[in-house]
Image 1 (tube, rainbow, N blue to C red):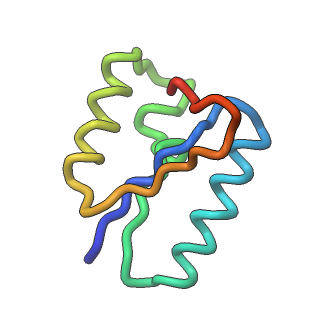
Image 2 (image 1 turned 120 degrees about the vertical axis):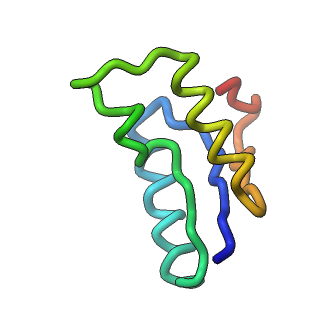
Length: 82
């Protein structure tokens, strides 16, 4: 199975919604791929448990290294620093 890392801003409700819609379209169009969307990773995003910036970076880095390719959303006047 092909693994895709979806890199995009996720700091506003609009960005979260855009990411969700776009990834759903990718998954529907290409059912044989696995898309990693950082905002869906409850192990590091669930606010009821602790995850510091180092843990989040490690979790996402591991997923990136396991991926076959990356899709990066670079649609702003300034590229998101995250």
